[in-house]
Amino acid sequence: MNPQTRPHIGAIFIAYNAEHTLEEFYREFPKALFESIVLVDDASKDHTFELAQKLGIESYRNQLNLGYGGNMKRALSIAEERGMDIIIDLHPDGEYDPSSIPQAIEEMNKGAHFVLGNRFTKDTHPLKSGMYFWKVLPILFLNSLARKVLNLKLGDLHQGFRVYSRRLLTEVDYKNNSDGYLFSFEIIAQAVHAGLKIVQVPVKTRYVGKKRGASLKSSILYSLGVFKILLLFLIAKTGMRNRLFKKKAGLPPHEIGNVHDASIQ
Image (cartoon, rainbow, N blue to C red):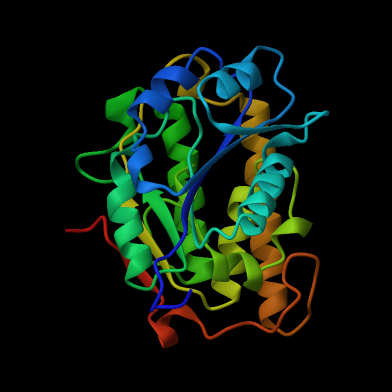
């Protein structure tokens, strides 16, 4: 973005059956910080889309369910079309607290290309907010493995509080990513491969109902997918391009100093 002009700060809400949480979420959302707010409904079976329109949110609806990644691709494409420079990605289900948004925007203004939330801090640990213990253990394992392979020093690589920069979206081929939940990890690995600056900020969460823990089958499939992504990343580092990593790798994190954890005070 041009440092002489004010960045266009926008928000994207990817929604699926969020009728019961959307209104309260939107009421608490810091709308004054944003020039644009867009909701993309993934063919919900309830009245999410109609409620979003009633609340005055610029809303789009997928005719068919595209899945998490498919909906993210459409939402990010709309963000690019709208000229957003800083794009906050927050789900309107109330799982992630929007109080971290100002700090995340500050990090973007200081030069970050990608900001992630960090649930694993002293004050924001997900066990305190209702996550099942058995779900925390595999997340910590996947975090540890990913940090070693990607050479990162970040605390939480599998969460849903994200802030994207326009540069990130032009540097990585996110439209070729998975249509499922693996999209969220693929784009992190792509950002590392491109040598972009990634920052984390602490984020509070609230886990209730189904949000307390994914099914065992879903957790296993996601973990296997993460292993595959890390393998493709290692292959790409040797110079062999593949579906996710088509460009020449950027400098590794320890050479360009592109990793910073703002959640460590």
